[in-house]
Amino acid sequence: MDGRPPELGDTDSEQPSRRPALINARELATWVGISESGLAQMRFRNEGPPYIKFGRAVRYSEDAVREWIAQNSHEPGDERRSRSTDR
Image 1 (cartoon, rainbow, N blue to C red):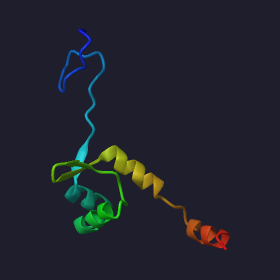
Image 2: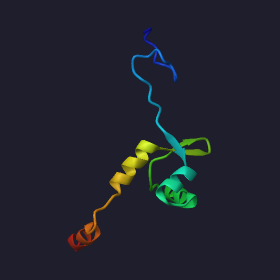
Image 3: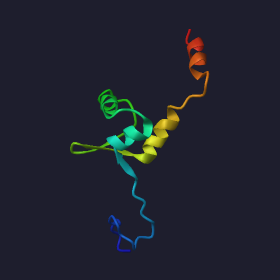
């Protein structure tokens, strides 16, 4: 190693390179059952899963989407209990 950071696709690096899986809005819409326009509205309101912009192109990391889904998962009865404690 010569002290330089490994380049993308560098097979000689000691660390195996793992590129994050990125998907576009159409793929995410199909995956989670939300329309592409619904995802656009969520981005506008700073809601929804984290996203990455490359110019006008929007991409989502599959790992970040999975985490967002987990954070927004609720067990049956969760909503009822949280409303009764808000009073």
